[in-house]
Image 1 (tube, rainbow, N blue to C red):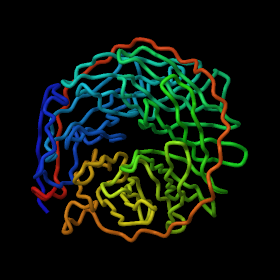
Image 2: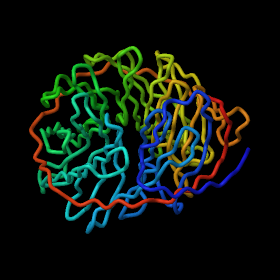
Image 3: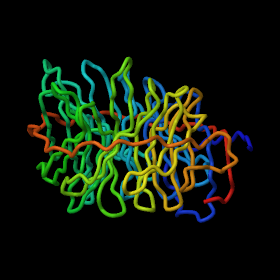
Length: 433
């Protein structure tokens, strides 16, 4: 294991140095940080380059950009004057080489979602604050094929409304609000992730609550904000969906969590595969040791037709984990990251995966092979045995009420500053991908 310390102070060339996929790119696992307090909450990539979105302080979020070999390209901090709290939300690439980012401001007196669009050099193109009578937050965002920006999350429809409704908002390429819809049920309802479907539609996933518990939720919405279908998944336990991705065959993988209540709450990975019409091929819950939590945060397709998911495992202590399954959901391999408390982002490459997360000393980033490893000799990533899986009953049609969302757009001022990034190698294999 080679340990090095690299320091790089760069300006605002956030994505200008994006390179095509490198045939001889390294596999690596490293810590990336400015002051050791950055918590990576989301990831995206351009070619082999990885971008982390991190909460830096209560006043700032950061974008940490690394090239195919884990060398810092740039780091920038984003803040809004006069706001006390900034929490990293979501990040996605745009077709012009830039990024679109969400943060959360407030409570002042409520929480509001902010969408910031950056160009390829890290300059702010526009920023939009989405306001509503109650709290509103965005958990995921993307650029649609027509250039619109689509975000999903949760919204409170009134100041006295304690329940949250699942929320989807669509902005024009210039940041103006095109439409907003809310999906409401008898209990809290939330959307956690969104991906592009055929014909300009999007598919969003999350969860819906009722007196019987929680069900994982998937919904297809067209470009005009009309819900094409909505499907609930799960069984007698509480299920939620955290992420969704499109697979090589054109269908979709949903990953989330099953809450099992014994003497203490336990969480288990919940996996499902469904097609563009909402028909579920299979859904299952992955077993885990008693009195532990194995939680899922993100998903990425594999080159062989299955998918991998990332998250964390609390047994024997909190550690990042990645597990892969084939197209039927059968387990292939599981890796545990000893130097990461949580893995919050997973990106697919033709040659493997990019991953981001955090531990006590900053953010963690890695470039892995298709087997989820840096190298077989790397002591920081170990192979563990995948647990057994139990199939769940068929999915049921969901019955949520769809209504216009009340949010409106307002202007804010975003401050950008360069960040000085340090990287510290934990494992590295040159030219392994």
